[in-house]
Amino acid sequence: MTPDALAIDNVSHSFGRVQALSDVSLRVRRGGFTALLGVNGAGKTTLFSLITRLYDNRSGTIRVAGYDLRARPAQALARLGVVFQTRAMDADLSVRQNLAYHASLHGIPARTARARIQHVLDQVDLTDKGHDRVGALSGGQQRRAEIARALIHQPDILLLDEATAGLDVKSRAEVLALTRRLIAQNQVSALWATHILDEIQPDDDLVILHQGRVLRQGRADGIAGRQGLTQAFLDLTGVVT
Ligand SMILES: Nc1ncnc2c1ncn2[C@@H]1O[C@H](COP(=O)(O)OP(=O)(O)OP(=O)(O)O)[C@@H](O)[C@H]1O
Image (cartoon, rainbow, N blue to C red):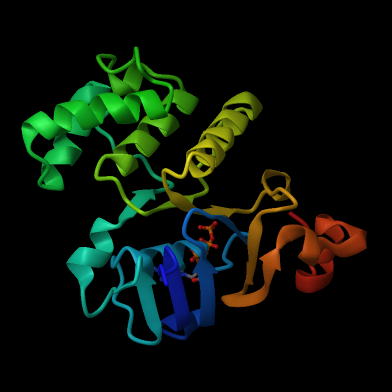
């Protein structure tokens, strides 16, 4: 059986006395789009920091494409592409220079890298922007360049932490549509962390995280029921985004 793109079981994490995550378990199907919905402080960034090994995971298990993050960190991290909330590209360099740098970090030979760079630029609709300075791109184009960077080593799963933060409505829609298109084309799977209910579609897999706990997990329309997602979210958490 093909392993899930991401399988998290019974993961907890605390910062001193602050319990940021409590016994979190979730799945991202291979080729699936999973929305991780939670208000500020729900624990999304902490979870991403554990998956990317910025923080050491001391309880439970995290598997990326079947590789246990603790037992086989190099293999697990090689299957992971990450789009952080903060910018990961050098604004003074061109998009291509940034991508070449990240390709070399992943040990991709220069010749292979050149073909890959063209491919990922095409994937994110930045075919003609490769020689532009990152700092000269619009906010939405910069986000798409970040996605290209995350795709350069051909990961199984993308983690996107509030990837539309700070973008205008049009750019937000473009970044989300691009991510969904990559999934539809079977290029990758995605865990999409957000606090924006409008970004979730009825047939998405949805995980509702609140105060460090998974409150619900399943298809969004199943969780929404007849009352709709906003009301369901309010009933579950006691807050509205
Ligand atoms: N480095 C830290 N030290 C202490 N507490 C922290 C630290 N990082 C996060 N926390 C706390 O852990 C909890 C989860 O925070 P986290 O940043 O993971 O939530 P989030 O859902 O990503 O929110 P946001 O969208 O604001 O980033 C919060 O109570 C937060 O205050």
